[in-house]
Image (cartoon, rainbow, N blue to C red; front, side, top):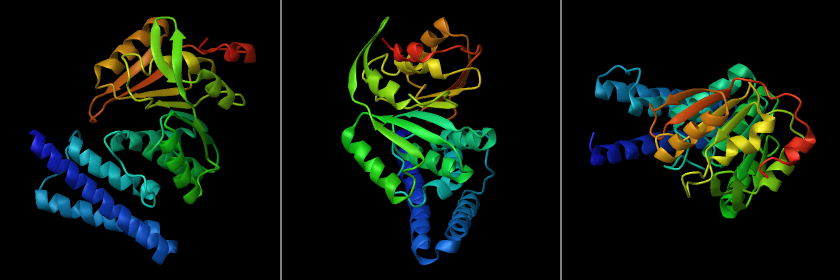
Length: 285
C-alpha cells in the first residue's frame, strides 16, 4: 500500500472508531442500562458490512483488519471517553492483548510510563475485575490535567494514581538522557511490593536512551512474574534499548512487529529477592 492508501485507511479506521464511540456515548445517556450491548451490536454490524463490502475473510495477520477487530473489542473500554486514539497512542491490537493479559492473569499492580487512551482502557479493566490499581507517570502537565479530568468524569480516578513526574537529567551509568524524576517514582511506589505489569510508552523519544532508564529504576519491584512491555520497538532507538537491557539482565524477549509501532514483551528469568526499602531508595542514583 502507498502512503495515500495508508492515509485513507487511517481516516477510515478513525471514522469507524468515532462512529462506534458516538453510538456508545449516545446510548449511555439515552438507554444506559443496555448501552454496552447496543454499542457492541452496532460495532458488529459495522464489521459485517465491511467484510461484505470487501468480500474477504479476515486474514490472521492482516494489520489493518486487526485494527478494526481491536477497536470493536475495546469499544466497551473506550466508548464514553473523550480521549481518542492518535498516532502517539498504543496500537489498538497491542492494547487488546494487554487487557486480555490483565483479565487472564488477574494482574493487580500496573505501572505505566505515559498516559492517554491506554490509561482509560486499563483503568476500566481494573475496575471491572474489582481489584488492583494503576500507577501512571506523565511528564506533560497539561496532558496530565486532561487525562485526570477524563478519569474523574468516567469515575475511574480510584483505579489510577496519575503522577505528574517532571523530566530531569538522568545519570545512570552510560545512559545520558532525560527521564522522569526518580524521587517522584520512588515516592509513588513506596507502598508497592511488586509490579505485575510495566507498560513503557513514554516519555517521548528525545534521544536514543529516552526509555532506557525504566528497567533499572523499576527493577527492585520486578521479578520473574512481572510482564514488561516496551512500545515503539519498530524504531531503532527502542531496539537499541532492548539489546542493552539484555546485556545486564537475563530476559525472555518476544518482539511483535505485526502492529504499526511494534512492541517488545519481556520477562526476567531470575527473581530479585530480598530487596529492601534502602535498595529501592537508591534506585536510579
